Image (cartoon, rainbow, N blue to C red; front, side, top):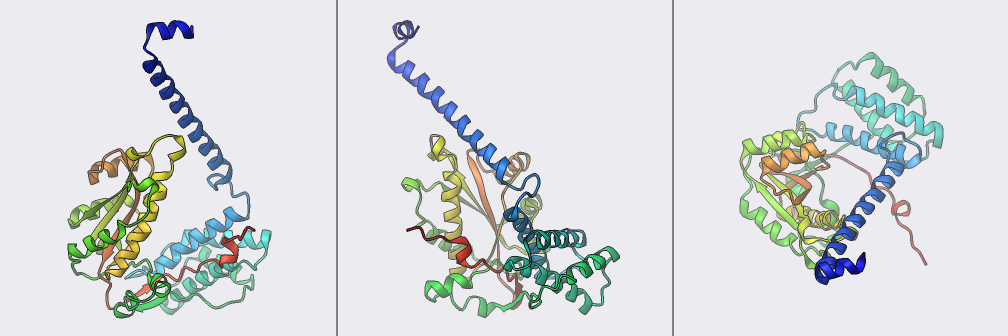
Amino acid sequence: MKELLFKIFPDSFIRFIFNKTLRAYTIYQSYNYDRKRYKKYSDSFLMKNQNELMGNIIKHYHVFEKGLTMPETRLGFGQPKLIVLINECLKYSELFGINEPQLKHAVAVIKEYENFHIQNNFKLESNTLESLSRINSLGIEGQVSKQLINYSEEYFKNTMAPFDKFSVSRHSLRNFKDSNIPIESITKAIELAKKTPSACNRQAWRTYVFTDKRLIQEILKIQGGNRGFGHLADKLIIVTSELGVFGHSFERNQAFVDGGMYLMNLLYALHFNKIGACPLNCSNTPKKDKILQELCNIPPSEVFICMIACGVPPEEFKLAISPRYDISFTNKVIN
């Protein structure tokens, strides 16, 4: 059979078909491997272990950190989600104890939420109060969380400082005043960020800068993670990554790796140019992805990395405290 094929078709044609079929198979095989691993180890189904439960606790307490830093925090916000967070904290304490730093911070944020409503003479719903009494009975000691109060001049004071001070001075900003950012300032930031390293210098990242307020609001409405502050954004940057410069199954995630590296560099560059910025999640469903591609006029060969809401910070604003793990938890030295 093989000899017959080589007699009928040119050798180059057969090798082309063989390679194409082989690559198609390896791509399928690789994505199937990803699917199985994600299904097994992510918390998409039941929270099966300590990492998954803590991941949910962090994700949920951050909702309240963000809510407490909004320009106009809505009284009584997120009570059903607060009950979910409390139940997760109770479950974690029962299974793994109460010494985890992130658990303690979650409880501190819950107490800050409670105190915020007491100070504003707002009565929470009865089931919320009942859940609060349960979490308070745990007796987890520590200070009540307090989101950071900052000032515009203070926020940008380390833009020319050594990197150790500069890098820790950048925060996600969710409060902007009605003021225009010169497009030249954003262009300068993009110019700085282009020095980001990439696989074989392929520079797959693409940036789209939106200036039309109406279109920005349409895009942010679909994005969905900017309630309470998205309407204040003066400019919107969308970072994508071009799939066309990558090949083979082993490069299937490289667009996201290179795009993520560029995104962080761009956030630093925006901060250096004294532009307030907040990265917004672009983990889209296929349906949302297609809607955004069409609305933003982005080619289907490009994958979304992130959106960045940009604006000029007001004179006074709040920042989410968002404590980090000690590097002894996230880092290993292997001899």
